[in-house]
Length: 474
Image 1 (tube, rainbow, N blue to C red):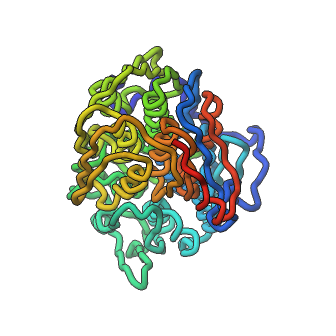
Image 2: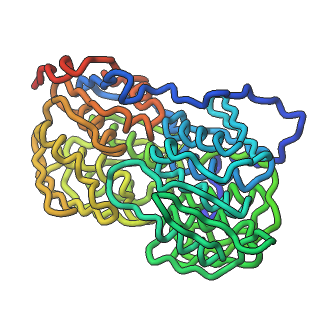
């Protein structure tokens, strides 16, 4: 196991930036290169039963990149990030920061954010409404400017994710917070405009609340202690990033985080941690196609629960290097029960992709989704492909079937889209996956990476009539 707050063997660069650093070409319009649902109907065509082989490179973590970008608001200088994934959500967060006065420049996987002239404390509704993670700017804005006005956020429709824990934490730090007309208005009373350290207990180990409170506390006066804090790797990554700017944080990765506030934070350069959910998705792609593939960079400790469940199902996983793992398929798989839990438990973001594998396992599997009430919407689409899944409340009972059959299916959220792609890789005939705006929010060019492994998959533009007339092959 890696010790808490440590780094794996692949290099994470942390250094001060100087004026001699090569500038990155500014991006005047931080817009996505991905197609949106309004830009025609982009769909994936997948012809299943094609074996995979080779190696795939895992991108930087979406859930880290977004909060690190928000954390750059704490610094009155330049933050330069490497290993930034190319995602719609990253693009949207860049647009939000630009609207706040941040100079956003991008070159491939390098993203530079200059918040030295932070001018605006109000985030624009039209952007925030599209991105749940946009609420992460609340804590940094409040700590840096003494005021934050952020609309209640949007994002995936996987269930209610209230911001009450965020609000209570900021109030405990001394902020006045009012929610009116869909807008969160937070400010610090008095002339000093600094939050005050506090002891905060979270009723639930919310990742977002832990991160928002931790960021706000880095510039507060005195000591802040967060009890029952989230322990996810993304929380540790944020703490490491903040420390690279001079923050004093201890305990990230445990349920008790201690932050000693400092007057200001300095410039830094930082590498985004690899995406554990993308890594898990590729492990499942190898398992369901009975293919041996390897992937890197990864942090195996971030995948402990997923690897343990794969082995229970009958899939072999070899750790070939500290940052490289390999999936070793078996001829037959057996059912297994899954219950989603906060880290280090089984991740909710892998629940849907794992369900695709379990549709082809011998026997019954019981999947309990304990974190989000609407995260079983992919069941109906998997059943269209021949799966045998019954749902009662937040519990899905999966009875293994001999095969899946290609069909036109609709992605209902980000991780459901990955589940349908995985199912399509193993299905007889052609699967057409619609709703790719979900996929593009969280997977960096997934289809190109799968093609690199030999998958028969391509993205095409079709009108609605052509999509509906796809013939199911099986």
